[in-house]
Length: 197
Image (cartoon, rainbow, N blue to C red):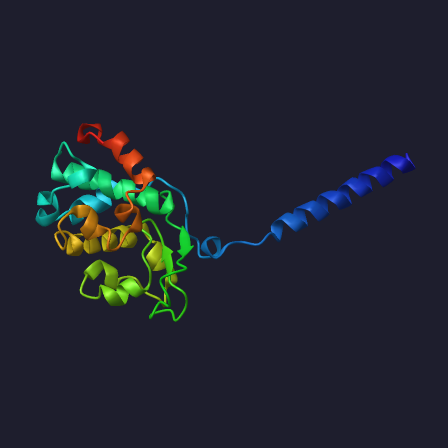
C-alpha cells in the first residue's frame, strides 16, 4: 500500500512539472499581440474594390497570353502573388539582405505580410491612402491582411503602365513578379486555366 502511495505521488509530481513547463513555453510576438497567422483570407472581398479601370485595361502580357476578364485576372494575380510572397501567411516576415536600412525603422529592411510590404512603404508611398495606415508605432498594422492587401493594390495601381509590360512595371516592387516565380505561375495556371500558361 505504501508503494502505491509513493508511485501515485511521483506521478502527481511529474504531471505538475510537465504542465508547469508547458505553460511557460515562449510565445512569438505575433501570438502575444493576438494576431492570427492562419491562411484563408477573403482576397476577393478586399482586392476587388481596389481594382481600378487602369488595372482592368492593362494587358496581362506573358502572365495571361490568351487574355481574360481584367477583374478576374487581377483577383487571381494578387492571390498568386501573395502565395509566392508569403505562402498566404499574413505574419510572414523576411529580412532583406540587399535592400539596406529602412528609413522608418532605422533597421535592415524587413518585408512583411501577405504581399511582403515594409515600413518604408508608408514613407515611399505616402500619397496612397492605404499605405498611410501602415503605422510603425503599431507594428501589427503591416500584418493586417486588409491594410497589407489594400496598400499593395494601391502600389500595383501606381506602378501599372509605368513600364512597357505588367511584369516590368510591377516587377520594380515584387521580385516574384519580376522573376516570374514558379509558385506564382503555378497558382495562376490553377486559377486561370484559360490564360494558357
